[in-house]
Length: 406
Image (cartoon, rainbow, N blue to C red):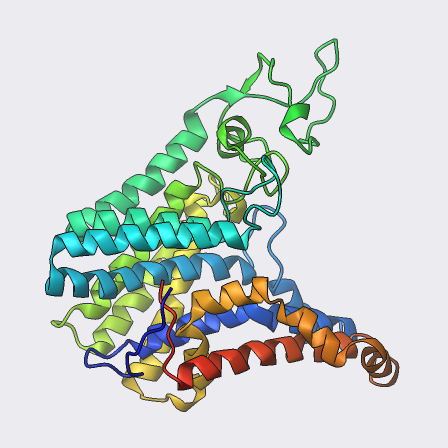
């Protein structure tokens, strides 16, 4: 990363609706969730209870608002590919574009490893795949496809990834690694193993077309082939096979970016197309989900369409309000965050603003608030203080035109 001296509004103006939506998405990660959890402790019913439930992932199958946060960011990475790589492709040529994308991929992947703990642990307790790693991989493959395939080909590749992943998950058999007794009876119908050494690697039983937690093809490939620490013990929600449909999510963003950049369409028609595509994706995703359930942790094809549909609808709404109606004053804090999204994401992990906020509003301050205002009031103040610290950092960087680009 290196500080950028670009002005806030360069000669080729940034798409404010994209920056604001990116900032909105990151705000949900950086502290809005903790604030709602604290509100739920104070008033656990009604609106606050509903919102707090939406800020928790579905246990397995299903979809909540928090299940949109990650794919929405990947969707916007795809949009950014169109604006950034196309600019370098036009100004400097294909070679420069390739060098930029590979350099950015390597740097993102290294930062991802640092975010996950780096080498603070000894091997094999180092996690090789995670959220930022997935973003890096999606960026790499979606960029390569974008540079070599026209828009109709992009649609075909996206469809092939989704249908191909469904076919693999549905029709390819894999060993049933659940432990069994000496007589061959299952110890448990669910997978209770917490590490791969507890799995039944000598099993002669196979399964196919199942999507249970820990007992599906994507999880099996992680159990068998993914080295290092796995987030869920024997498998990882950002694992090997499920990276394929995640790339499709990024390509949906590329297609949205191409639509936004199309000079032959009016801004209003772009919004109509985005909204229509969003509704179509939602309908197709939930319909597909009847057979291939909507599951974030294995990034099912139906989940890609549902998340992509909501992403397109949110982009349409932000584009309508910001670019067409020109209502922009409310976007200021979102722009602060969106301009340095990855930097703030790393800072939230390395600096831990919540821990710093405890130094400002913990201890007796928290106890006093809980006792006088109500249980959860102290946690709410701490969560808001931590979020305020990150917003202050975002504002500082933005106002001084310091954009830390990867």
